[in-house]
Length: 275
Image (tube, rainbow, N blue to C red):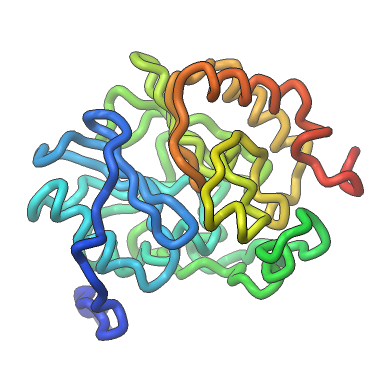
């Protein structure tokens, strides 16, 4: 039976005046869905724009409202996923239905997005914070996006974003990607590195800004995660919008990211995960 177009659910009716994307650059903005960011690439009221990640579940209508405030009734050309964890794809199916647009992800992430595989359960013993403790209860099977999702081009190009390229940054998940624009060294890092200590509910609440490694409770390949951070630090980004935390720019970003890359084992990897 053919699926009906997405219509807002009753439990999604919320104070839409607060659904506003915050500018980072003229053509890059972000909107925080509880604890994770979705990113809008494209100048306000441009005819072509792209959504990066889709936040947690039950945020579809708020993301739609934030998009309308920025672009009017123009839908995105596509949705790009940095990876398939529940907090990045929770509203993906509803948004794809509503806008009738394709979703792109790395080929190594596809099995998790079409119902073939589930991610490992979160590790509650690392990170030392409430979110780590709760992580085993987080969903590990993403919504089945088989009808909409397709693999990104193998050449590193990003559909509908001519000035951007994607970088395979595995570790947090096998097919995790980050996006980079060489012309001004703007980076969308997903969860390859973030700017808040995501394991701590207090840090997430107050949004203390500092470069951290990927969320430890959901990261299961630390050697790859380390190499991914080194790869991104070598690009020396001037601005970074991460999956969790506030955007950062300038010397603070560059110095802290360089420090993380050079001291990853001490700063990011839980002690009992050293290889």
